Amino acid sequence: MPLGVLAFAGANARFVRPGGDDWCFLPVVRDGGLPAMVHKFYFLDNGRVTNAVLVWAYARFGDPGQQWFAPVSGALMLVLLWAFALAVLRAARLTVPRGVPLLAASMTSALFLLGSPNTYKTFYWPAASVSHTLPPVFACAAAVPVLRAASRRAKMLALLVTALVGMALGLLSEETSVVVSTVLACALLVSAPLFPEARRRFLRCCCSAGIVGVLLGTWILYTSPGSLNRRTRKHSSTMFDSDSLLASLRGFREILHALLTTWPYLGAVAAGVVLGVLARGSGRGTGGLGAPDGSGIGRKDGLVVAAGVCAFLVSGYACTVITYPVFKQEVVTSTRLWNDYLLLYVLLLTHLGFLAGRMLRGRLRYAGPALAASAVTYTVVCAALAMSLAGLESRMVTRAHDFDRQNRWMHSQAAAGVQVLPYKRLPLSEMTEPFRHGGRATWPASCIADYYGVRRITQASELP
Image 1 (cartoon, rainbow, N blue to C red):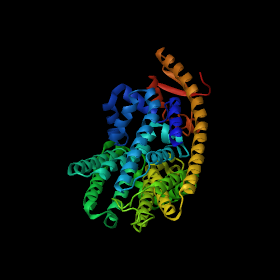
Image 2: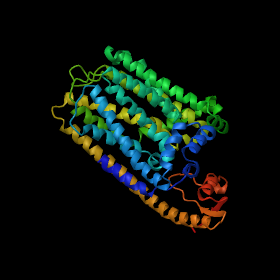
Image 3: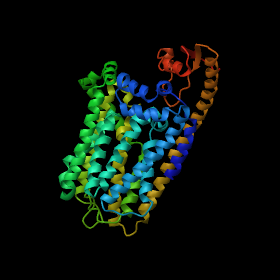
Image 4: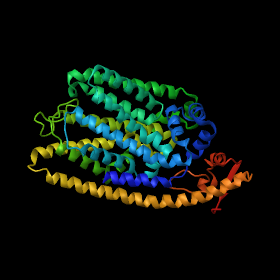
């Protein structure tokens, strides 16, 4: 069922059209390619070099790149989370029936990508997905070689991958860098009682390499001219003022309330219950999960949960503090900003479900009732996600039809030499369009003019 929902979501991507930052990226890539995009990000915008490369990778194909981004990135994230689930189970010395890891990974992916109040910005809008949706999944993928490393050569490769991915994340997303550093720091703090001595040193080296990589990438980003320009424009020096810290705390409290009361995330708990009920083995692997007899939960599981919850709360609040000077009160409504720590939340729910499933397996003679309840939860959650997607699809179709009509007319007028063109706003899912707030907010009107090769655009009340 989650795979079906993801396939439905991917098919709807054919109705994606440029909007927001896309207007500014597409002309730069079209006219200057990768060097121009890197220059724009590093010297002018924010210093995110990795972000510039990823934007170029899809924007170089123009409008089709916008439409293929969601299905391609969604499939990539599903595969990476599937590999992560397999690696975690292998490291914990747990076996499950074939297909169960994919079931858990697909539900995790569906909730992470489609469970947001604003699915369009989370999944379909490439500019937001590159900055806030892909990075946490890349961080999970970096853990796969660490969890699977057995030989000396494999361990050296895992250390290198961890450091390089950490540096790439530092140059991609400040918020995900905070989340990754917090998780790795928590892993270092609790490593002694959790991990067996034979692997403790290697895992600590990997955590340290990841933190060093993130710090190095963040330092390159922070010292870039683009980052300096952004900090100056957005008054980022105020983020540590008492008023900003308190406002960020209130904002994060509202975000927490929204997450805890969003019932479709129960699908992650259901996925964890299935894993826990069907898993076999002592669970005494790298993570030290499971009771010695393999039929319940062990004493160390409380430490794992506590460390995960602390990492989620600390990193979530820190991300809110970082973004507050730019977005102010909109940190609560700009749900794409949650994605940097939302995946950690979904994984925590899955782990809690896993522990509940292990406990149920030890107490119930038959696993049927627990699996049946999980199946019902799966069905209801997937139905809710599909209904939400259906409503979004109708709005995407309407905008795509209007956009294509206006796009053809504006290209024809620009080809005829007209230098000032009227443009009708086509908002969707709070996407940024010019002439907002009664025409006072014009951005990205200048980028739209560059896209069509004209001098400027004006506000139109009707489609041409």
